[in-house]
Length: 288
Ligand SMILES: Cc1cc2nc3c(=O)[nH]c(=O)nc-3n(C[C@H](O)[C@H](O)[C@H](O)COP(=O)(O)O)c2cc1C
Image (cartoon, rainbow, N blue to C red; front, side, top):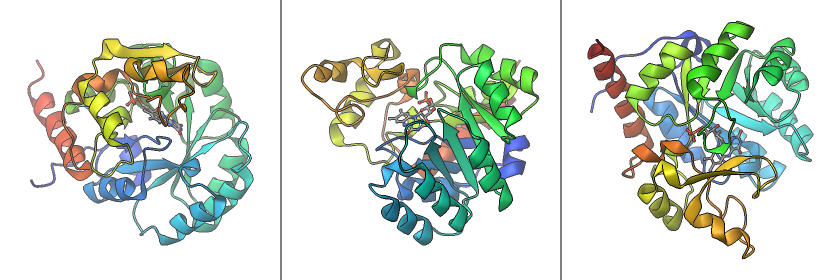
């Protein structure tokens, strides 16, 4: 397969990537191999710093990662690793940092000082406005139906609303899994933010059972609940029973979003990025 034609937006220009496809950070799922494959395909992927067991492991990963576009996700709230991980991000000059749950101010200051970019993920307007005041470069609009901690507002509304209200570039998150949906996302915002679809890639760290459940699931079997972590998030119904039996959140109680509708086979990440881009071009040409 040859690389599909590039798709240019405010986000691709900002990050110097070929496609407006950002593979979202996923706890216990994102891997350095996934980051690499996605970057080699012309997009960018983000990894949670907490996917590395210690700050030293995280730093070793940063030192060894090749000179390709990639991002790191920092959890801002109740995260004892934050200071150490931010110091490592600064030393390695990580090109992109995505912040979640908290005030991105100190991260913006540190990352802008070396020329990196900061995106804040938000589920509503209040946080979006605060993040803009702190100087973030773009917002990730985490809408209803997203994997992980999701919002409650429809992606059809959240992304264009935040864009209008803040004037910032916006990434659309929640349910995106295909090129047709990327086309819709670019009518509403500036890039697609894909999580769930990339759990079933060869490069992800998801185990056999997780993959099997994901491939078989329908969006109607995705349950939005705060029972697992205290913050509302989406989980696969068939794994939720394990919670009462002491099953560990994320590890045995599996998260996924409504995009499971389109996860029907395992795919290498590079092929998947190219497939989404190609589908986007076909869908665009077929618009009425
Ligand atoms: C298994 C899983 C783990 C996640 N872990 C994180 C995380 O550690 N940090 C974060 O900011 N978002 C996390 N998310 C949310 C994603 O970054 C992203 O917002 C979401 O997956 C986008 O929606 P989609 O899954 O419908 O594509 C996670 C999502 C999933 C499915």
